[in-house]
Image (cartoon, rainbow, N blue to C red; front, side):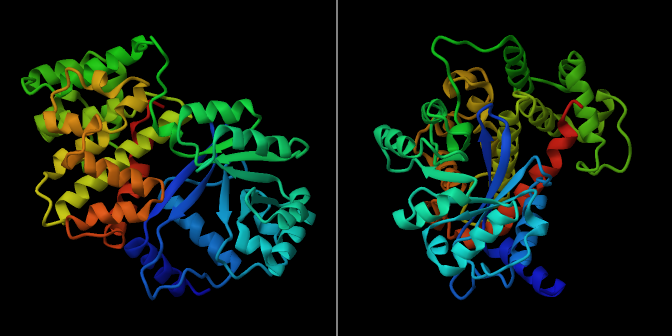
Length: 422
């Protein structure tokens, strides 16, 4: 494929197709790999890519723009359904970080069976769906490294029965559509090795458990930073009182991601240059990204930043949207506060100076802010019709919003490294 054609494809994806990175976690809640979820292309645009190597390069390029650089310790799960390049012979370049996933249509084809057999012989990795036709599944099971089991629409007893049927399978079991921490723990107890779904973005709240000491102090910082009565002198004092926060704010403000032309050497200088509200804003962002330092927390911080940026860009683009971009950024940013703290949202928001309507939306009320969050959740889980229905209220659509979504994803990926303490 020529560079020009690949560039056209990238522009096509950036402008018309939403691309969402979905993490896959292992049993210890570390990131095992990623899969790209893409919205359907508009009518008249093909989903086909000319050759397998171009498809892989294309997906890796998108993931790179979303902050993911692959090596053998992070996998790319590549869904082969719908692609017509299963007659490849040379897999030598794909044996380290690519896992080829097959659904019913691709796996049932003659090319699909040939592809799986050749990949297996050369030491590559293949994943197949448990829901394949029984004869196809039986013929491929011994040649694949991963069996995917979707939890969607299944009762716990169904998953137990599936696990029983696969008791002699020696590869990894991947639970997909895991939508709660209970489902994660249940499939984990059944011996599943890797997990994909929205569970990680939900708060993991243990009964009668309070906030950890470190989280209490950080939440108090967020409250103080968003206090309308906080003046420049007090803001400088608040930030300077926390050595780690001071370091990370200065590191971020002086980073390439922030884009200032001269070095800022003190919090007082930052206040004078950026202004009170601007520094409050970015100090809040820096504190939010430091609430959970686990791999799960890093994914949540990325989501919070990406959501905030995307909503603020939409607010600045859609004429029918009367919500201020700054307000929409904070809505997206705070939408993962409960998950980052493992604490109920209503309690986490207590004492934070946000508009009551925003707080209500964050706590699940179906107001205008809550609808924006439901649109985000629909995008992140591939419920494109739901996302479109909400966007249409503002005269917008998923294809029209795709550019802002990819830009927001790329922006969030660039910001995070500059905000870390190390």
